[in-house]
Length: 127
Image (cartoon, rainbow, N blue to C red; front, side):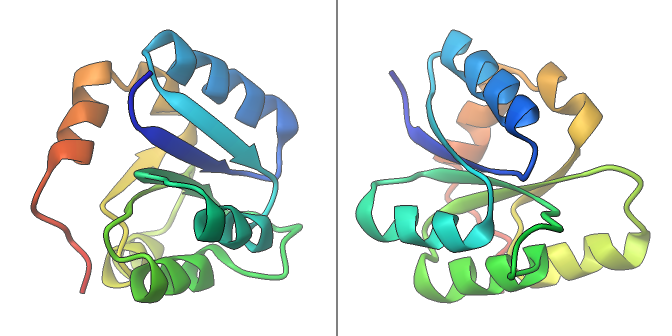
């Protein structure tokens, strides 16, 4: 198995399907339903990449989650999953440390080589 990946999404079916796809690509993924649990996992596990989606059931917004990751776990790469996101939100994602923004519907088309490129990248968009 390759790098550890954390999936943060409030939809269990989406998380499960994405986790299975990542496993087929050779990645090990941990899934959590909200940002609060994500922060706890990050404190105790070696995670290389976090997929974050908007999670309305969480006490913590996706932007706040990015801020916490940027401040406390600056070496972790982040990909925001979003559909129908306004340009201003994309700018906020980038300002708060997202390495990439990918449409939720397109995530299943992401290739192994694309993830490898993100994980091996020395260049980070974090502020």
